[in-house]
Structures are given as C-alpha cells and as structure tokens.
Amino acid sequence: MRLELGYIHITDIRFGDASKVEDGVLYVNAEEVEALVLRDERITSVKVDMARPGESVRITPVKDVIEPRVKVEGPGGMFPGVISPVDTVGSGKTHVLKGAAVVTTGTIVGFQEGILDMSGVGADYTPFSKTNNLVLVIIPRKGLGSHEHEHAVREAGLKTAVYLGELARELTPDSTEVFETLPLTEGVKQFPDLPRVGYVQMLQSQGLLHDTYVYGVDAKRILPTLMSPTEVMDGAIISGNCVSACDKNPTYVHQNNPIVHDLFARHGKDLNFAAMIITNENVYLADKIRSSDWTSNLCAFLSLDGVIISEEGFGNPDTDLMMNCRKITDKGIKTVVITDEYAGQDGASQSLADAHESADALVTGGNANQVVTLPRMDKIIGSEEYVGIIAGGWDQNKHEDGTITVEIQAITGATSEVGFAHLSAR
Image 1 (tube, rainbow, N blue to C red):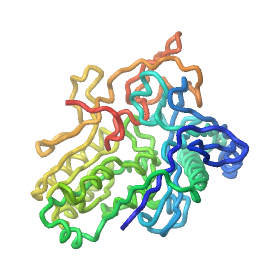
Image 2 (image 1 turned 135 degrees about the horizontal axis):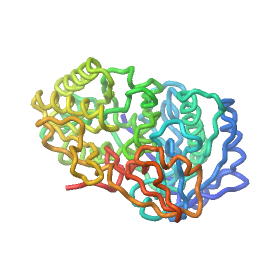
Image 3 (image 1 turned 90 degrees about the horizontal axis):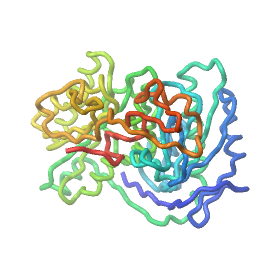
Image 4 (image 1 turned 30 degrees about the vertical axis):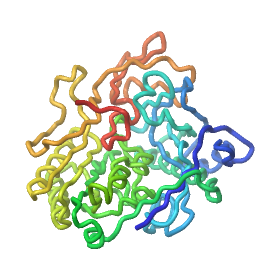
C-alpha cells in the first residue's frame, strides 16, 4: 500500500463567520459545529471552545483527542466503519490539518479521564499542549447509560474532526510524506540483507469502557491479525476507552503512532519493516493464551528477526504483554517491549504487575505514579469537579490557592506506551 499524507500546517485557531483555513489559521464557525453535534439526540448541549499553546487554560476531564483529516484520493473515508462506510483505507492521498486537534470533554463517564494544561508544568507532560485545540464540552442526556454516554461523546469528536478535515480537501499541502509497504515476498526480495522487523501493537480491549475499535469492530472480538501500517495512519483504529489518561492512546495517537513512523523512517536503511500485527488485551486467562499464541505464531510464520511490542494500559494487560514477549522470544525472535511503570510515588515498588526474564530489552514511558503540582489556570474548559476522583487524583488534592496535586497518571498522554510523549528513564 502507498499512502501520501499532505500536511497543511496550522499555527493558530480562531472563531469566524465561516469555517476555513487561511494563511495557517483554522477559522471555525461555532454555530455549525454545535448544530452538527446536536443532531445526536443523545446529547443535550455542547459548548465549543478553543485552547492554544501557551495559554493559561486547563481542559478536563479529557475523553479523546482527534486529528482532523480528509481522504482526497483513494478508497475509503475517515474512520471507516464508524463515520464512513467500511472500506479498506491506507492508500491514496489524505490531507492533514497538522497542528490542530479536536478535544472532547464534559460530564465524566469513567474515573479514568484526563487533565490537559496548555501552559505551566503540566503542559510539559502532554503532547497536546502543543496543538491548537477545538474543544467540545458535551453534556449527554440524563439517564443515558455509561456505554451510550461514551459512544455519543466519541462520535461527536470524530464527526467534528471530519467536518474540520473537509476544509483541507482543496488545499495545497505545505509538505508531504509518502509511506509504502510491499507484499511480504516482494519486500524480502527488495531488502534481502536487512533484518525483518515487525511491530505488535496491543490494543486496549478489556471491556467495561476499556475498548478500542478496528474498522468499527470492538477489538475484544478480534483474533490477532495482520494490518498494513498505513491503514492505522489512515484512521482504521480509534480510541473508545477510559483507561488511565497517562497511557491511553487517544485517536490522535493511533493516527500518528511514532513507532510506525520511526520504523518507516528506517525501512530500507538498516531494517525491513516487514509487518504490523494488532492484538488485544483480554480479561480471562484462556483469551490471553489464545491471543498470545496467535500473535507469536504469526511472527514465526512471517519469519521475523525482531519484534517491537507496545502495551496500552497497565496491571491486567501486563500479563498479556509478558505472554506475548515470552512466546515470541521462544520462537527465536528478538523482542523489545515498550510500556510505562507504576512504581509508586517513591519509585521503589515493582513497576509492572507481571514480569518474565525474556523481557530483557524494555523501553519505559516513565513512572505514572510520579507526583506533580499543577498551577492555577485562568480558564477552565470543562470542570475541575472531577480532579479528585480521576485516576491519579485523590480527595483534597485541590488547594486553596487553586493549585492541584496529582500523579502524572492524571495527565493525558504523560507516559505514552508508544512513545508519543516526552518522558522516559534510564
């Protein structure tokens, strides 16, 4: 598959009479966005707001972050199986409003939602303090069940991202990148002397609002399978989960997975990016065994020399991570594991809930239990009502001077397990 991404660089975001992109500025007609979101009768109200890098603004509780894009050539549309009809994406041309994002917030659906500060120490921990954010403060209908609540908020964000992406359809990109994967045998012939490297991406799929969707299908219902990395870049995977804010992959991260980008950057130079495998994270032991068996067998079937494995979440999924690592290593394939740590506020506790000697090459996204005090912000988009109950917060953690003390677990994207963040450790 060959995918060309054309980037329209966004340097500012403003309200305007008409939605458009002009001289790097994204102008948004708030009334049109409100009307779009309120077509869903599950939503009672929506407030459209904006947050720019460096502003004294806090967005909380954050549900999802999405990058606006539009398919301008080739099969499929944005977020197939959810917003667009089911069709295989990952080829053709897609335009991207690079530097812009849609952020969803509002009444909380689960305790594992996040904080996004646009300035101050908290901004250093989240990549989304660097984007020009259109924020939707969404209030779903009273009495709506948790899953329907989450579904309504998720769809509102995706529809808004598609609406903004359409503004780029006729624009000339400021820059372009091309990503291409060949069929396996052709790739081996093209780079016979380079090690064949694969990427196993573990998708959060434990249920109870811990869901990820692949072409609209809940990942807990899939068996491990091959996917072109350009499909992932083109919106085939979206977030629908409420795991801890620090290490959940918002939809924006799936669209911009840095492991995929970095493997493409080295493809044909010192490695052959031969395959991407997606697998799930299960609750029951039998399901964990089944998925890790399939994952390791696929790696062996493809005759991979090395595999990168990334996790999403922590605790129970640590077992899936170690089972994948152990079984792939047992096939004679070298592995590198990417995770984060929950080592206690003093850093002295066991970092993962499970471990195995095969995981001898590990990259960490940082210790999610690290404590930080966030400064008072001049403007709150959403509500600080929940900062004491979200994962990483605690009772009485908001102080009289307006500061808030939390574990960085509460900060959206702080310890990204695909490396879409700024933290690591040695």
